[in-house]
Amino acid sequence: MLEVKGLDCGYNGKVILENVSFTAKEGDMVCLLGSNGVGKSTLIKTIVGLLIPYKGDIFINNEDTRNLIWKDRAKIISYIPQVFSSMFQYKVLDIVLMGRTSYLGLGSSPSKEDRDIAMEAIEKLKITHLKDKIYSRLSGGERQLVKIAQILVQQARIIVMDEPTNNLDFANQTIMLNHLKKCIDMSMTIIMATHFPDQAFLYGTKALLIKDGNVTEIENPNENLTETYLRDLYDIDLKVISLGLSDISRKVCLPVF
Image 1: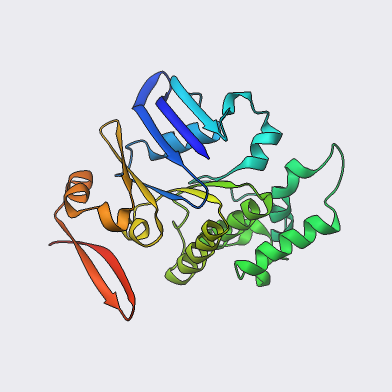
Image 2: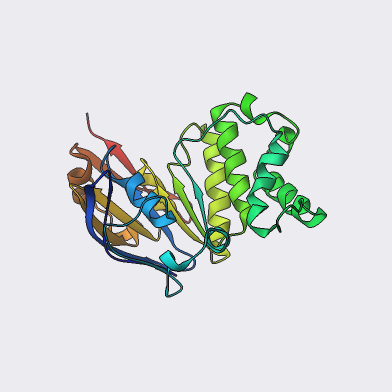
């Protein structure tokens, strides 16, 4: 379980978010919602240890994350940033194998087991046709899927993602989100910043609404994330519509023009 208590976070001496508290348990998908620049990425970077909190605590399974060395942290929590370099002159399979780094001894090379784990992740994301291609020559969407495969082979129980569906077409968004749903079913924890409230309705067990330096936690977004919350969050007129599809009920968020 991830537990955030009374967290103040920011960068360059500036506090962006204050008194943030929430929990994320096994099987949770926590969707961070809010406009550009409100602090979603700042919160994510603080959770994964790239930014030092100004105040408050972050615990994983009741252990203060400040006590974890990088190798132990990497086995527990994995991270896909919003922007990453595309200059690597490595094959896709090699990039995915880098997710096994925390399991390797000093100077050792990936084993057959490591390669099998990497290929399994590649196959699950349906990017086998890319495995021998040079990473830097891929499209933005293809690179994003490769990075997702990399964190899957890391086998961390908590996956933190900053707008992972950016640059993905509709089909690849669906492939990625359906695989994340499988991770939730396997009792993993997903924390994901997104610009799409529909993803919180469909996949989220919690939503964090971020605005004006504050974070509001919403349990069960499909039931409790209302038009009022979303209008206030984005400062636009919108409608939340329920769709009945055979035996499935889904909600979508649409702007009103």
